[in-house]
Length: 235
Ligand SMILES: [Fe+2]
Image (tube, rainbow, N blue to C red; front, side, top):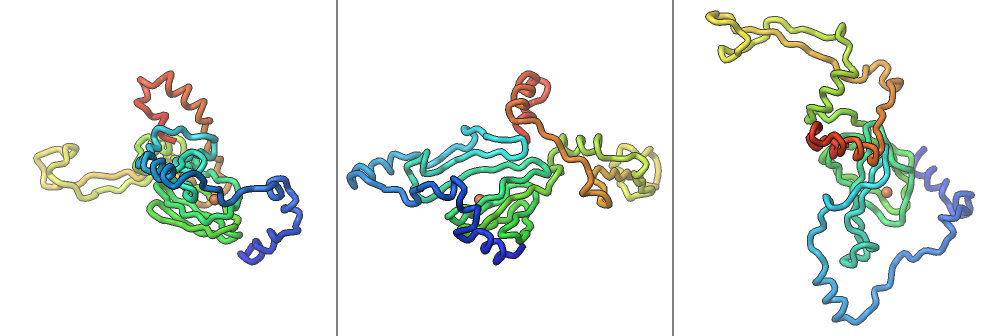
């Protein structure tokens, strides 16, 4: 679907506009009323730093959300809303749109957005923008965080097939290698390559990754916290 077709599909008068959420009255620009001095003093009293760590995620198991700054909870702003979303591996958010434009900054992973039927790939470090009233959806394509040794070992345990391993013989090494028996003048060793990935040939048929709800994970990992060293905080 092209951007034009998506826009055409959401024209007023179409069935989707008769749904309750589309026809109820809303206030898009809220009144900012009181005396000037009161508002000014109130703004000065607002916190300058909002700790997202003090806020809990809601939702799951595929999509987790926490609001950090928004007009409902912080009178420091009428127009800015800030939140953090976490998509589980292979997860996606709800298709939606809003009257504001939005900027998304990707902290970790890789995935893609669909804006008006058009796919846009992104990865950690990228910023993406969604224009006003554009129907869009976020998808997490990532699976394993290669910097997280627990993730990596999980993949090794669940996705590797030993018969598919490769061994590189006589790879270069150094005299510092403790695995090379000295004295010798042949500083070589071998390397094993473990393919702990979803096989490319049947990637789309690979079983979906299951993630327990945040509540269940918190209960389980709190019970075994001394054994798991805070691992439950990682999604
Ligand atoms: Fe959005």
